[in-house]
Image 1 (tube, rainbow, N blue to C red):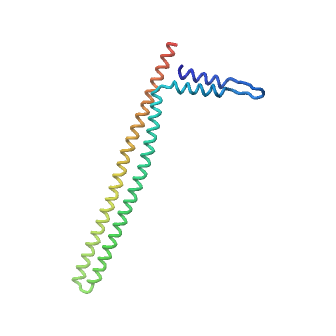
Image 2 (cartoon, rainbow, N blue to C red):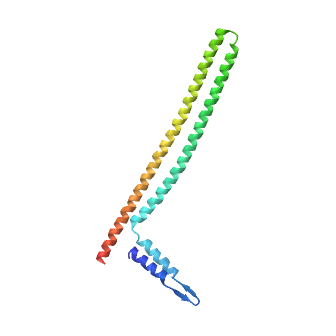
Image 3 (tube, rainbow, N blue to C red):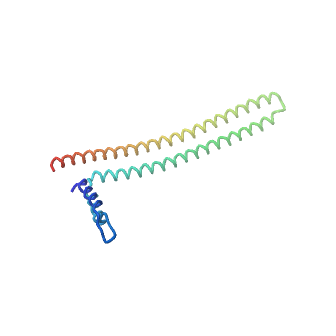
Length: 183
């Protein structure tokens, strides 16, 4: 029995009106359920495999989304932590430089030296802060690249599933045409 014929029988069942006293029923629920069971049993294995592949692909996509969200949140937290540490270190270095500068204010040679050292320290702190920020951005970029790779694999699996479904549909159409010619 093929799927199209079973569907036609279901359609006929829906159209039949049965009366029981003042109550009219359009179809027998037990017969309807049996026809549905027959349809499911007659579905090609390829369709069942494709449906399973699709369900698995959806699970992989959901898992990848969760992983991506977690990775992005971790990268943001790590970046914020690194930037906060850089700011703290820069402030500490600046405070240290100011303290040194205040001690050397008395003499002009010492003052010039102090200003130069303070500038060097500030520049070093700025470089360190920029370097730490770049490190955080690189980390976030790497995490997003990994996420992109995972999502790419999931998309490839989805595409394979779609192609399998298309091949299955084409095979089913050819089989129906052959049966129609034979029948």
